[in-house]
Image (cartoon, rainbow, N blue to C red):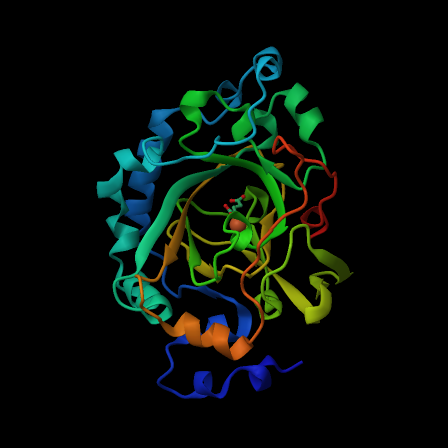
Length: 315
Ligand SMILES: O=C(O)CCC(=O)C(=O)O
Ligand SMILES: [Fe+2]
């Protein structure tokens, strides 16, 4: 399938920034040059010096069961580890290629909506009682099981293919995610897997209708909007690797079965009020609905997992 033919004509002119072409065609973009790897390493050393990313992060089973809390367990203003390291983020936020790329996508004055540390917790750091409880869950955000003082970081043990729109019901997919690796990430470090072109089917309710059709291929259906065949792309890279994706691009991570944690930065970035950048054109050209009133049907009333199914573990 030559997706170039389906890309809107305006993206094929030589003056179109490559990031807009990547978004229009494939729904994500890898920045060509890594960000300053030394600066990434310095920030990583500070983050590591702050705590042990091991089983000491977690509540005991009895502590958890005494008062299970599944909501409000992610970083938020006033409880976000990056608030102590703002000065160390210039290697991302002021990198010319990031500024140029975000300006092309979102227009001048774009806003950082959220930024946080994400940790992929390795299997060896998860207490046995917890591993038994979460096995097979589609979204293993471990915040509920982490001691309250450590909830200034988001901890994952894998997350099934999802759209980042999942946390933004009733909002247009007018923002992007920016991910930065702070150390080398290989297949063994729970890398991000992105499903190329999946943004083309617009907003879709989690969990998604995906069937594996080959070693790195899936068929993805979004109800009445239609279906497409998509290639799975594994985002591995060096310290300072950066990638950005559309809020409707499916992506996920497998549980980290290695023995090292992955520590990364995750940003959500959107346009300034009333400004429209290239992403607006991308979405208009796709012409699919990019907003949902309800984004997920996998949770019970308390916010706990109500289904046991996970596609990304087959990736
Ligand atoms: O880092 C991960 O394991 C998954 C992150 C992700 O997709 C997210 O935070 O939205
Ligand atoms: Fe995500």
